[in-house]
Image 1 (cartoon, rainbow, N blue to C red):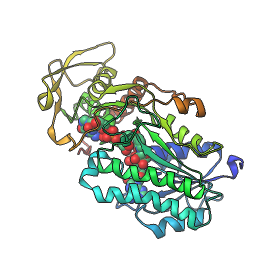
Image 2 (image 1 turned 135 degrees about the vertical axis):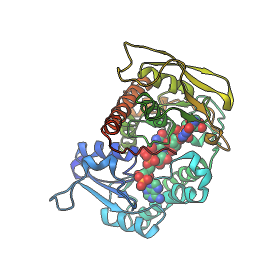
Image 3 (image 1 turned 180 degrees about the vertical axis):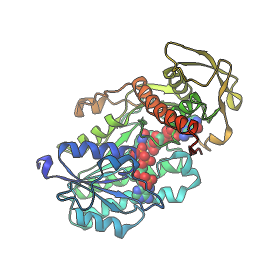
Image 4 (image 1 turned 90 degrees about the vertical axis):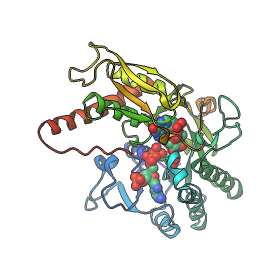
Length: 379
Ligand code: NDP
Ligand code: GDR
């Protein structure tokens, strides 16, 4: 295989959480990195602005192209132009709850979008040259048939997102088997970071609690607190995406930490990272989380809540028509074949996310105190 400094990678979804960490990782290795970004009415490159290179820079190794996974001609042209050694197909309508509201669009981007990439590589005669990583997901297991879930556990998706990704999974396997392409699926379990989108549950919690601690919000409204997930850090997971493309043969792998906690536990631990002890009362949609104690050694001096405050409430609108109640991965195959050892525990990740969101909340507090307006959107 070529040295890294002579390799070109193309990342769809480069403006997302994983795309930004992966771009950093590949640039560090010496790759030429190309990414596809969508046209939006305002800038959507916040996560990659720190690695952006001005188009007027000579010998750029980071290039962005406008594109969309729903546009076959655009995808084909970019792949033809870039002639990538590796494609990471991370672009997706990735929000499970939103997929119930936009099922057809989700199928187009997450399902047929994958086919568009594979077919472009095939038609352009790049099957020998280009290796493809497909961002598959633990959502394929949905209504779980076996615990923990391995590469052999049967799939039973529970959302339009899961069903679209199921197509993406099998079409990737099919192109590998039919045309001998190096194409593989990473069946990744939930992974988070300070760069996680604000409407996914982890970031909604750390951002919401940080805002509450600064008096910017009073109460955080949540959905199903009993859902359990296997959580890890996105920085660790993108390294596995790369490693999957560096093997002798293309294979699909489960990437998980094997550590599962509930949404409720995630809230409790995030509050603890702020020095707040929470107690939950009630059940179902009547459940509320109240401040039970404030640890004066751990809590910041500027904390704006007091014992007895109700800072968590359950709201039916965040429930899904069909829920994935529990996911727990068994990453043994990845450990053996890829040497997978996650470097960050879920508690370390929570502390990192809280620290990051607290810094943002404090900045906003300071601006408000100085008479400036602050916009802090919520869904
Ligand atoms: P994000 O939602 O943070 O990023 C998704 C990316 O896809 C963004 O860059 C987004 O662009 C782009 N995108 C959305 N629609 C289109 C489209 N029509 N055409 C081109 N690009 C599009 O997701 P993550 O980074 O968290 O996840 C990366 C991938 O991994 C996704 O495919 C996701 O489904 C999958 N996955 C994620 C897991 C996780 O826990 N994070 C676990 C398992 C799988 P824009 O910024 O403009 O919105
Ligand atoms: P998920 O992530 O659906 O697992 O998909 P999300 O963080 O949205 O939900 C996790 C669990 O938390 C429950 N939940 C809530 N979720 C959100 N978003 N908002 C809430 O207020 C809330 N309250 C409870 C959910 O019901 C769910 O059970 C993520 C995405 O990154 C996918 O792209 C990826 O494929 C999978 O992880 C693995």
